[in-house]
Length: 400
Image (cartoon, rainbow, N blue to C red; front, side):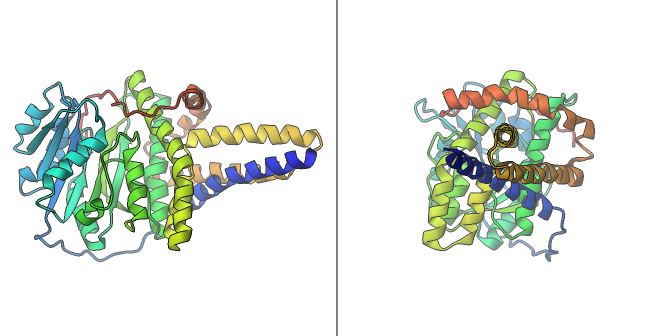
């Protein structure tokens, strides 16, 4: 029995070490400068469309359209899919001269179904590149051109740099949430780019070759449809790559209930995707003999940072108690290495990319942030969220 417990604790400790080490390597590589690339002028004949799925987005759709309307030559190339809207989303979008598609289907709800509707509208046109933008964010100048450019040149899906802007008077919880997004979408993706490896999709600011999207189905109510889309495309030979120069910005929800809804959907969906898709990626990596799928499986295996910290704390506590009871200290040693990788990786990412925006004192509130997350993860064990639920919007104020 003692031998069995030692083997079990060592195995669990090893499982926790893997995502911690992956995180450390990604954060470490992000510190190195990237390769300088010569600018290639984009052929003006490249045909592209922008799809914006929108469900009751009247408070935010205008700022989104303002940020991209000057980045296209023909406003009609921007297609807003007003999906089951009961507000003035479609009316506001029409004022900007963009194409507006109104869709009503109470049974097939969710962003994936809206995007599929937009693609079906374009099926007879077959543009070279499709760009997907959420209705609650704004894009920095030239971002559309950079996304189209990189996707057309590489013929791969491209993910821009998606960050969440802090509220005007951020709470410590807001600062830690912003840090978690920064580490996930900028630090880790930058590290993967330095290694020449693919990344996951972040949900908005994405460009795709038309032919790539014909290989997969977007029509689903998956609660993390972007993450699943990136995996499906990678399995078809179209692994996504990162474009840090195309910057897309959203804002953290200020309402407590909205923040809880958003985090629950993201993190429950992420955990479900880890459990379902990591084995699928590893199996495909073996059968297709592709290292990029192994790398993507390792990237996906890193759970939300707060959950990873909780798992580490809980497991290291158990192994220390087991050590004092006479069991092997090897699991504790493995976990101490994992903890070093986890802490060092996050600190490296914060020091390089987030120190100006996220003050050091905010890191002291991490324990309270973890306490706030406990009910969210407990809910996953009791009743994981499986249906798409829209996050209530705060009005975006573009301060850039």
